[in-house]
Length: 198
Image (tube, rainbow, N blue to C red):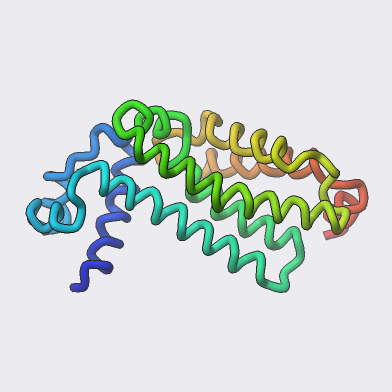
C-alpha cells in the first residue's frame, strides 16, 4: 500500500477521533496500533504530533478549497452552487469550532497560526469573490463582504450544534436552518422571489 493511501486511512480515523474526543486525547501510539503501522514509520513521515496535526488540518482546508473552486466553475445556478458549498462547510465546520480551535491555541499554537493563515490567504478571498459576484448579479444585498464573512464564520464556529461530537440528523437540520436564515437575510428581493418560485 502506498503511503498516500495509508495517509488517507489515517486521516479518516483521526477525523472520527478528533470529533469524538478532541485533539488533546489523540494518541499517536493507539492510532498506529489501529492502522497497523509502527510508531517508527509514523514518525518517519511526521516528525511529531504537531507536524501531523498541521498536515491533517491543512489537507482538510486544501481539499475543501479545491472542491469549492470546482463548484464555482460549474454552470449551475447561484443557489445550486451555494447549496453545494454549504454542504462542504457543514461537513468540515466541526473541525473548526471554538472547542477545537481553543485546544489548538493552547497545545499547538503554530498549527492554529497555519490554519488562520490559510483562511486569510485562500478561504476569505475566495468567499469574498463569491459574495461580490453575487452582489454584482443582484442576488445578495450590498453588505460589506468582510462583515458578512465575519458573521458567517462566527456563527458556524460557535454554534452549539457544531461541537466536538459527530453532528447528528437533528444537528444537520439545525445547521441547514442557520444557513437559510443567513441566506434570507442577505438575499435581495429579486433573489428571494426567484427562490420562492423554485
